[in-house]
Image (cartoon, rainbow, N blue to C red):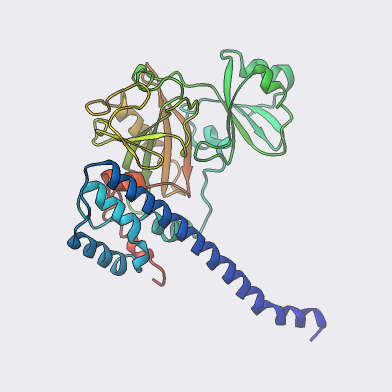
Length: 363
C-alpha cells in the first residue's frame, strides 16, 4: 500500500470521531438554547397572565408523551409551554426542538429547502403576487422579468413609482438582512458583493393594519403543508406587528396575534418576542379581540395555490401583505427552518395526525 492511502486509512476513524463529537456538541448547544427559551416563555406566561400552574396529572401526561411518542424526556419544556397556554394537554403537539432536530432533517433528507432561491420566486411560482422589482444575481442586475439592466436605467426602473424600496438578501430570515432605502442610498449599493438580492416595492397596507401600527408593514404569517398522498393544506396563521418605534417587523422585536378560525378572527391577545401577553397594542391601544384579518380567505387560498407548485418543500411559511383593495402580496416565503412553536401553543396541535413521532431518534 502506498503512503498516502495508508495515511488516509489511519486518519479516517479519528476524523469521523471528531466530526461526530462536533455534531454532538452542536446538538447539545441547540438543545440547551431551545430549553432556555422554553423556560423563559413558560415563566413569562405564568407570571404575567391568569393561567394556573400545571397540575400533577398534566405534568405526568407531558412526561409520558415526551418519552413514549417523542423518544426522550428532554422534549418536555416546550410541551409545558403549550399546555400552560391552553390550560390542558393535547396529544399531537410537536415541541420546537423536536421539530427542528428530528422532523425537519427527516423531511429534507433527500434535498435542500428551496426558500433560499428567492431571486427565482416569480419564475418558480409564475405569479404576480410578489412585489419584486429587480434581482441582483452574482453581482449582475435584472428586472423582475429577468432582463439585464444597469446604471440609470436600473434606478429609473426601481424608483419609477416609489421613493423607497426594500433590499433583501436572498438568505434573509427572521426579518434580518432587510434594508429600506431611497434612490440616493441605492445608487451607492449598485455594486454589491457577489451575492443575491431581491428589491421589492413597499406594500401599501390595509387601513386596519395602519390603525393597529402604521410605522411597519404588518405581515400575515400563513403555514401550509404539502405531504405525499394529500393536497396542500392550511395549518395555521398569525399576524406579525411592529411596536415601540420599530419600522421593520423582525422576529426579535414584534407582536404575534394568532388567527383563531377560517374567517380570520384574531385572538384576544398578542404575544411579544419574550411571550409577554398584550390584550392591546402597546402603542396604539388597539384591542385585538373581535377583529378580523381583511381578505383572509383570499390570502389562505393563494398560499395553497402557490404551494401546489412546489412539492419539494413539505412545509412553507408565507409572509403576506394585504392592501386596501384586497391585493395579496407575498413579501417572503420560508421553508426548511419554519417556526411552529407559537402556532402550536395557541391553536395547536397543527400537525395532528401527521405521525411526526415516527421521526424520533433511532426509528
